[in-house]
Image (cartoon, rainbow over all chains, first blue to last red):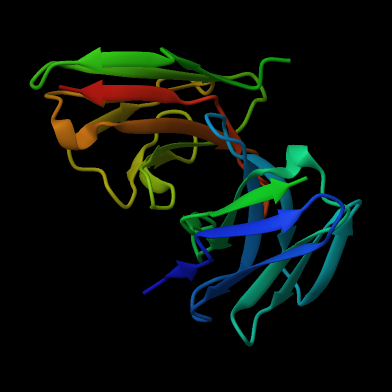
Length: 109
Length: 113
């Protein structure tokens, strides 16, 4: 199968750092995308990883280990507006996305 | 720049009624997708299209039909709506190159009574 697993919910404090993990079965995926989705809105693209390692984009970074079937999204200097769901999606051999259920991130003052 | 536009935004149907959800993109994207999003589940692919005049089934195609007569439009039809089709429907598009991100519309919230 092509399951994508991520925690259902996480809580963090404004100004802190949080890491959202995503695991998947290693066979069949060519890379991994991260999207952000605010409640009642559309998913918006954050980052993608095709090769192993860390990709940094401002306050957000994403890491991939293809051999371990593991990725994480790192959010630094958390702001209240970062409260959202974060969706992890693997790219299959047809370049379609297989989506995790999302991690709801709650930011507290 | 409109990006991906979905109409309608909300709709309530009775069981057995039919309707068409419209998706339009102005980015000249080759690929277009229809997803449904249900609580506690990831986005699930209903149908997709790799270019004008082509369509293919995704993970959950039953009860839905699609058409892509023009490159910029992708239509999703429900022939006989069922309560199990109550969901939020998202359309997305992407450029043809590998690893291009999908761009999403704002969604259609559909309730079937």
